[in-house]
Image (cartoon, rainbow, N blue to C red; front, side, top):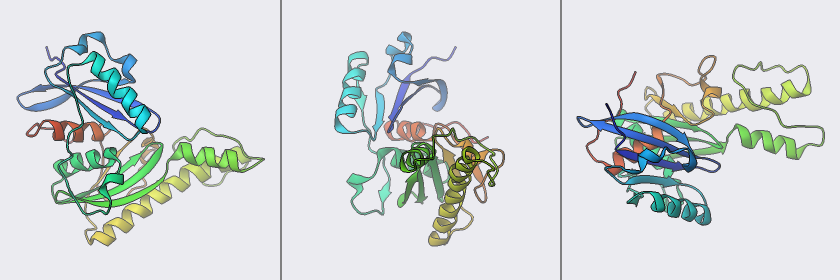
Length: 250
């Protein structure tokens, strides 16, 4: 029976995602997914390897998380992403973007565009192991909050896939603006990045907690599109365990 041997932890702007991995014959498989440290089963405290951590939180939240992990596990490591960087001021680039790009570069050595739709939506290009940079846009929750806080007659909505572009009352119009607008922004950013790279046929890899808004009922993204819910965690695993094999593409 498979056992978890490694843990990857991704601390985002609003959530902490944890993936437990089992590695057999050099290939990694997901053992379990958990939201927050409290959800991690006690039996996972005996791991063969260190906990691999990525965080884009502020110093206080990052330190609190690292201390909590160190109390429960033998070692906590922030691995080097291992990518060449074509960006200025790399110290300002979120680690989640770099680890997602690391996994995409492993899956598609010639290059790919990574779309991570969560609190923010990032669209990043990686080519032959080099992180080329990308774009950061508001994710659906930020768009909803901006509308609700910016207009006296507007209110918060719950974005959902497949809403029509024509809303016949205010709530539906807000949903259309958020969801259809988000899809349009994602598509345009991908197309422009592919054009700027001069590589229109690169695949697109989609991840993030709000990715269904871009993928359902049909994808808004061009070309060859792959959904990888654990992409940041996969990049962490590759960075921390050189030579490991990721789960195969479906």
